Length: 498
Image 1 (cartoon, rainbow, N blue to C red):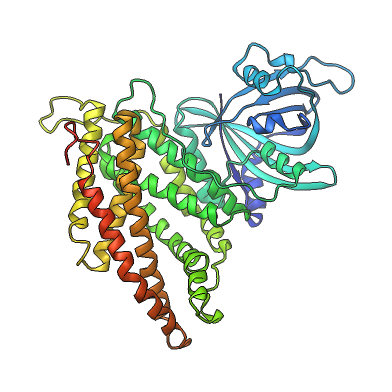
Image 2: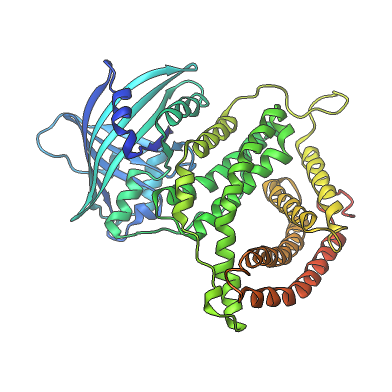
């Protein structure tokens, strides 16, 4: 497994970064590589990258596999003996390795390889010691070339050679703070493949099921939640930061950060250090709030705007879409990237103290028992707001929706620890309630927007009247769905009662 973190370098910081890397112990190496795939792109579809690279005067064939979207990838590297001319790619060089098995599965018996794109990189690299680890810092500048098209490369990598994994994000955080770097999980091979195929945008990444380590304790389960949320957030954040993001990338980034905050709030005790974990979540809350304006604008332009026009509203009422570039600059900021790295540190760090303890100090709570405790407490807090939803103020209604969202994400995190059939029924009832509450909330957001527009745009009164007519039926739908949710069996109860 290759363990590394890669960051893009802001143009205005390149000179200072190069000076920081190029100490007296730095090495300089030219890296010229050719990446190959089949005509039908089987390797790219399997998340594999096969390259032949000239490193100075030596040739190296490398096969890399899909990683964890954080900092690990399967890798097998073969240094070739000195020879005249350019060696040929040979898939047999990877036989008998985990990476080679992935290659054979992707290619089959008839997979014919051909060059797809190439890279030409000037690398400055040196090794440092940090927090008990040896880490290689490599600053790469060059180009990715596919036919007549090319992309610039200006990025820095931190690769763990030996030592504790948490040292890697800790060192990277220092460089992010100093040089304004932003974390990019897109590999050179991924960027090259897109260039060769003319792919200007890719689908947003959605949440994957959480896989807990075998015989996981509370700490390991919690760290798996953090890793899952980061693996969901990082690819979408990278697209937004790179300027290739679309509204769906932003939506998925917001969902990923909600999942992350759920793990930090509801499961803080599982970390063994609840106070700093809750402080981390509070900092994430401030960042998350800054993403809300863009999401609200998307609701107005993409959902309610067309409905208003269909109802007879003048075109002047259609709100302008908020540029996603505004979000891109925020995602590139050190504040955002330092929070990501601090979260990663907690996801890979060893135990600092004992796991969740019984109130009487009798020893660790069994994992399934700890799961039920968390879910029961989360439901009790949400239900207190649900029971007041009909006549409660808008602030309480908004809080009820947030608490139910956290309950849903918590259920998804721990799904593997509870019976499957009741879990599906519980998630279905919760999903129906959240859909109804989401529609009601969108009307509230739109009402607040158009109330601010009545003076410059008198036609906004039309929108307010239409929204008022929609609000009653939406509230009744929300109350019906909340009633069904309240009566549904609760998966965290062993007797399946409420």
